[in-house]
Image (cartoon, rainbow, N blue to C red; front, top):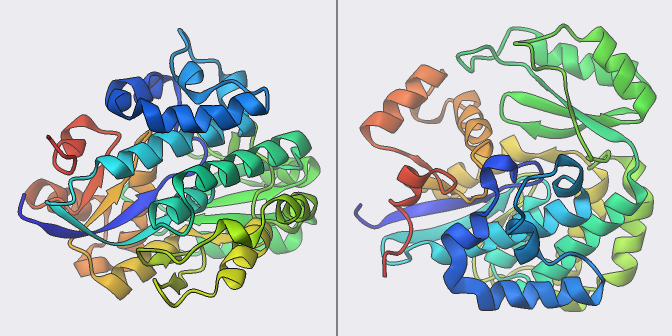
Amino acid sequence: MARKTALVVCPGRGVYNAGELGYLARYHGDRSHIIAGFDEQRRALDQDPVAALDAAQRFSVAKFTRGDNASALIYACSYADFLSIDRQAVDIVAVTGNSMGWYTALACAGALSAGNGFRVVNTMGTLMQDALIGGQMIYPFVDGDWRAVPGQCQALMDLVRDIPDLYVSIHLGGMIVFAGSEAALAEAEARLDPVDGRFPMRLGNHAAFHTPLQAPVSAKGRAVLGVDLFQQPDLPLVDGRGHVWLPKATALNALWDYTFRHQVLKPYDFTQAIVSGMREFAPDILIVLGPGTTLGGATAQALIGAGWQGLESKADFQTVQDRAPILFAMGMDDQRASVVTTV
């Protein structure tokens, strides 16, 4: 592959599942010194090391989906994947992420060191797990060909308006991630028509991320994670509003405040992050870091929703991918091989 410019996308919670067990050992045995640094932090807090979690003989939903475990494990996998990108073949022009992936993006872009990035993600994951305020549920507004169903998105927005304590948590391509109290989610669940035998889908061990319900977590995070952790990024960052933070021009106090206040308490617009990243930097390709592969679909849906280069459907996207791929998911071996260093 000739050298291409790329927007790197960092995944959030829910991407390390049974199929990803052993991801660190499988792809990043040569980066054990980096993982060991993360695990020093975990041991100091009497938490299971991420290397030990990754080496488990079987996947436990109850254990691996906990915020204090999932966040740390996903960060370690994603950050190691970022280091594996062949910079001779790929020119990274910007970094973005989904939800928890914002913390990873901060580290990949250099606004946080690797260790401080891990400290941030582990602290926030632990605080959210300890509080576990509310929950999340996901529902699509696109059909099987990833075309928007007329009126569906507005109907979902009306639901948020009608049900107390129900919020939009994440705009995720062709889906809306709701968050709220148990009562609010139960009412929404009862009012939504089943789709494909999967939706509405509750997300286990997920709190009401990106809503005002997380105010106590936001306050605790700001109290223990200071602005001194941050530094000027080396690469542009696209946040969960689509706002771009530039190297040598980032107000660190504002970045800190966004990260631990706005990003925790307000909706995360992953769709806008992708669209802004593509429009601002016009990369040749997108690279979705591992683990997992589920964020690739949402990323493609964001492109389709914006009509990127004439894309109107899943079929259009697949045609482009077959002819000259624009999206590479590092959780898929064949796509990973095109972007990782072989030395």
